[in-house]
Amino acid sequence: MATTLMFSVCGSPGITTAAVAATRRWYRNSILLEADTSRASAVLSGYLKGTVTGKKSLINLAVAAAQAGHIDYNDMWAQLHPLDSDNVQDAQQWVLPGLMDPKSAPSLDHLWGDVISGADTFESAGTDVIIDAGRWNVGDVRSALMRSADAVVLVARPTMPDAFAVRSRLEDIRATLGDIGHSDHLSILTVEKPGTEYPPTKVASSLGLRLIGSLPWDDKCASVFSDGAHITNSGRFEKRPYIKAVDSLVETLHQDLDRRRSLLNEALDNEVEELS
Figure 1 (cartoon, helix red, strand yellow):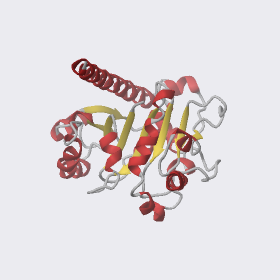
Figure 2 (cartoon, one colour; figure 1 turned 90 degrees about the vertical axis):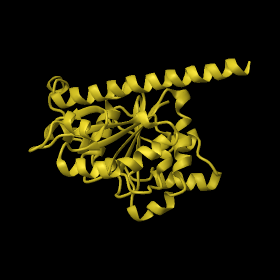
Figure 3 (cartoon, one colour; figure 1 turned 180 degrees about the horizontal axis):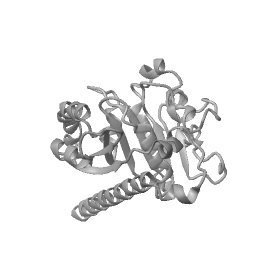
Figure 4 (tube, rainbow, N blue to C red; figure 1 turned 30 degrees about the vertical axis):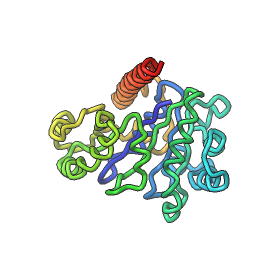
């Protein structure tokens, strides 16, 4: 199991849309975990178009954790909705909805470590987790999510305001990851918009970050993942630059995660040899 955290430090660059797109295009079974505490679930009202109730959510997971003292596979599984409403029985992608009311966010402050432990239990099922963390705050109480993630993707627009905001927060973010040797887990994904000021490569270079991908402006294509818009021509849809960019992002993440998994396995094998 691998965990990818997606977040921003300012504005609304389209994290949820990118996270839904990545989850739907993922290379194996995947779970989208909505961990944005600033608003009610965007996936239930957007991609799933309000077709399912909010009976399954992070809050219910918090209740289960309070009752059992921990979170396990069954607790997590009980809160998942299939993302493909037309193929519920054979679903390969799911969502664990976030909050129904942002006012309940403080009740999750001590839950994040348990959430990531619960997510780890999906490893044996060959299921990866993509976390939509929304905006990352200074001294964020969800640090366990970032520190445990196998890939950390900062989402931003390739504009001067976004670059300036990212620069002001990088030291704190790098310190959070560097303390545990995960500095190389951080990369940047840019989401373009009309009037984009700078090339994504230039923005990433100026910030000293690796550019892991760039999603082109395509309101019609993006609305499939943000609002559950209907795909009228699947063949043409598959060829759109936006989909190719999402697939490229997923493939790059796939390569990164496999490489880190191999390095971890190698380190563990070396430790076993030394002990024996």
